[in-house]
Image (cartoon, each protein chain N blue to C red):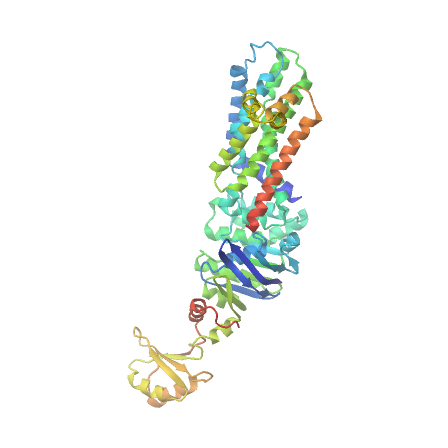
Length: 244
Length: 312
C-alpha cells in the first residue's frame, strides 16, 4: 500500500475513533435538513429540485469544514507525531495528499448521507436528477477546496483554534468575493479587469454554475486548481519549516 | 553506517549543532552524550531528515539525507524523543500502519510484526489503545515501531528516559541483542547507560563535538583512573606513610565514611605498593578497590571546561 493511502486510512479511522466523525455527521445532517426546509422554503417554492438544499452548503461548509481540517497538522505538531510521520519514508506531498483525501472523502460521505432528501424530492415530484447529481458534484468540489485551504493553513500554527479561524476567514472571503455588494464596493476603486478577476475567484459563482446543472470545464478546473494550489502551498510551508 | 560531516544547524542566531562530524559503523553502539540542550536531539533530527541542515551533510548507509531522503529513511529506524505515537490507535493498528508506511509486503509485514511483538513482549496489550498504556509500554511500542522493518541503522533518542530500573534493563538488553550487525546511535544524558551499552562515545555541548572516544579512554582521562581506594577504620597513621610512596601524588579522605583514596602519579601503578604498605603497617583493611576512573567527573570536566580542550 502506498504511504498516501496508508495515511488516508489512518486519518479516516481516527475521525471515527475520536467521536469527531459522529459529531460532525449529526450536526451536518441536522443543519442541512433544517436549513433546507426552514430557511430555504423547500415546500413553499413548489419546485421539485434541491436548489434550496445546495444553496446552504457554502455556509454550512464555512463552519464545519474548518472544524475537520483544523486538527490536521496542529495535532501532529502538538503530539510530536509529526516527527514520527515525516521521518518515515514518505514525501511531504504524499503526507499532505493523504490527509487531504481523508477529509475530502469524509465530507463526501457526509454529503452522500443526505440521500433521504433526494428520495423525498423524487417522491414529491419528478426532478431533473442530472441537475441534482451535478449539484452534489459541485458541492463536493467546493468542500474539497475548503479542505485544501484548511490543510494549508493548519500547517502554519500549532493551535487548532487559530487554524480554524484562519481557514474560516479565507473561506468567507472566497465565498463573498463574487457577491454584488462586494463587487460594487470595488467597482469605483479598481479597474474593471481586476473586478472581473475578483468575481472569477468567487467560489459561489462556480459552485452555483455547476449546481444549476451546467458542467462547464472551466468551473471544474477552477476547483481542481484551487485544491492543488492550496495543497502545494501547504507542502511549501512544511518544507520551509524544515529548513527555517 | 551513519556519517556526518561538518553538520550544522542554526535557528536564527542560535547554533544548535555546530560543525558536528561523527561516524558510527556496523556493530557499534555509539552514545551521543551531552548535557540537556547540548544539541543531541537536533543532531538526531538532522540525521533522520526531520530538519534540514543549515550546512554540512549527513549520510545513512551512504545515502545523503537531503538528496536521497527516502532511501536514507528506509535504512533507518528512528525513535524520536519521547517516543511519540498515535494515542487513539491500538498497538496492533499502529504497528500495522507503520508497516504499510514502510511498504512492507503483507506476508513480510505479518512476519516482522510477530517477531517484533514477541521481542518487545507486547502480546498482552495489542488491542489496547496506546493512550491507555504506561510510559514503559509506550516506549516499547516506540521501539517496536523503530525496528519493525529490520533496519541496518537504528537511532534512539533517549530510549530509557523515564523508565524504571527494570524497564531500563530490559531496553538495554534489547539494544545489546540488536547491536551485533547493526549501527546504533543512542542519545542519553545517563552515564550509567554509556557503561552498559556503548562501545564508543561522542560528547557534545553547545552543539559542538568535545570528545570522541571509547568509554575506557574517557575513564582514563579521569584523575581517579588508576587510583586506589580502601576503607580502613582508624587509618590516620597510614596516610603519612602513603604520602611517602614515590608513585603517589595525593591522598583524599572522604569526610563522611572515612574512605581513603590514593592518587597515582601519571602512568604509575600503585595498587601493589599501597597493598604492601598497608600489610607492613599491619592495618585491617575491610575492602580495597582499584578505580577505573569516573565518567561523571570526566563528563563535567569536558562539558563545563572551556570547550577548546582537545578532541580525542
